[in-house]
Length: 431
Image 1 (cartoon, helix red, strand yellow):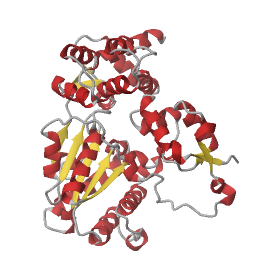
Image 2 (tube, helix red, strand yellow):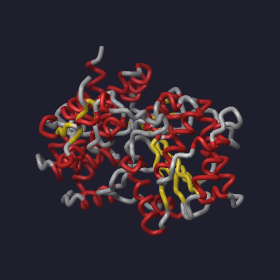
Image 3 (cartoon, one colour):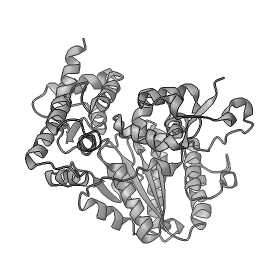
Image 4 (cartoon, one colour):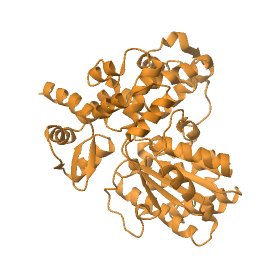
């Protein structure tokens, strides 16, 4: 069996920087491309042991010489390990999943609305926007402000970190969820004291664990953010029970119970296409937040943060290609600031090609489409259309969550010209 390797402490900053410079805005984008778990990638990026082969594969993808950055961990081989992992122990430190906000432009009044709402006992904020629109950056900014100015405790849980098996089983999901919150609050795991198998429902056990244990151990408000809630949508029964429990907590908090200390943030990328009882769904209560594209003024402000001297005309050219897409704009500015190779004009001319700065992002989207032929066919119809067209609802929601289309009532339009140019060429190459 191969030995484990970990990134040398002196190279950790280097590999983290390489992630974004190689076109991966989020850890999960690279993890999905390599078909490895998010926890494995996170362990690599934070200097924790990973399998030798995974170490080499990740290093190569990030343009790193694995031999130069490797630090052999002699204590991580299976023969030296006599510890049985706790099945409810998540592999990833949740706090590490929240990105640092180096460059950020506010989209008023969204930030202040989120902040002010979460000051209220039992608050619920629902943030919905397609992939890469800045949902996680927004909540990271709000959570950090609540900690700094109000002294609140915050918990960030990304459902992308849950195993597929746990997502499909309510009892397993709620145990994983409860353990993650315990860990984030720095509290001991006492699931065994509250989970009476066969004597109560999983939802009752989870609620008791929060009310009678977790929230009794803290003397200040706790803001709990659940990111990528979409992942549970495909498991209808589990989703209905899990989301119904969150709605029940929100309602119970209004009665002045201990749950009023808990403020919830639910983040998702697409419309809720599963049938939920209106009286049990968290998606028709609380404060809804949708993230718009950046305006020209906001793009100019972001350019100034990068210390780039972009004219209004250049910004218009950029918008003509990528619209107000925060990630695509940020990638352009990031390239111009840190790579220093070429002008904005050159970046735009090559943008939709395999030599362009968006190549990894575009390839990733293409790979996702190729895995679902019906979705690819639906998107091809959008590419070829010159006006909004109707699509089957599941395909429309999925394309919208991927950030490829705008969703308007029951019709969709293409998100930006960059996608038309790149994917039109790809579809022409594909028989």
